[in-house]
Amino acid sequence: MSDSQGRPAERPEGEPGGEPAGVPGAQRTHGLPAAAVFDALGAEYERAFAGSATHRASLDRLLEHLAPGSRVLDVGSGTGVPTARRLAGAGHRVVGVDVSPVMTALAAGQVPDADFRCGDIRETAWADGEFDAACVYFSMLQMARGEQRELLGRLARAVRPGGLLAVATVPVDVAEVSAVFMGQPVVVSSFGEEEFVALVAGAGFAVEERHSVLFTPDHPAGEPEPHLFLHCRRI
Image (tube, rainbow, N blue to C red):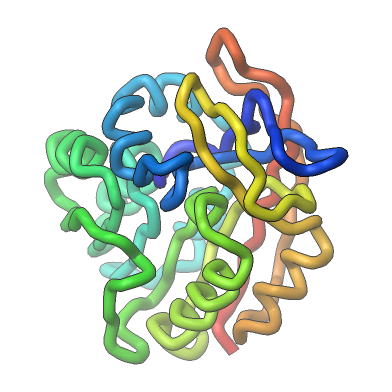
């Protein structure tokens, strides 16, 4: 689970006609937990994926609509760059959650003004309306489809009515496909673009903007992959 960018799996297997799917971690990865995958990647992940202009533009858009001192949940906070750093630097109160102890430690060192917690977001409890906004940049792709649907519903309760959601994914129609991501074995799931938009709307968010782009990671194995960014408001 990580903040920087969603990735294409380098070698999908196990599903006829399977296509590359972006992967920012996996809770089930050929027997390895997501923590092991992203502990191994560490700062290499940030170097490969932090350069997305569309991610930065998404953060700009979010910052334009946040009230001063907003409380923001960063799901899959990774190394803290760019999301937590930008938000905390603008004076917002950021709570980041990531399953990787190495990523969490890197984030705490790079963004000391934010509150980072190592844990599984699927098991973390939040009070209703606790946050003014949530960011979920490519950090659900490691979850099964049902878990993604459940998490979006939980986020709709954790974000106050009228609050904001910035969410991004790699919009490909795959379910629990085995792949290799930056040398690490992973299992990934995702949705096609229209299905993902409907999923977010069905959780209780009004989708106000969407942007689709191709992004090529700065990595020897990097290939162009589709990215979908949504900006939403809690109904």
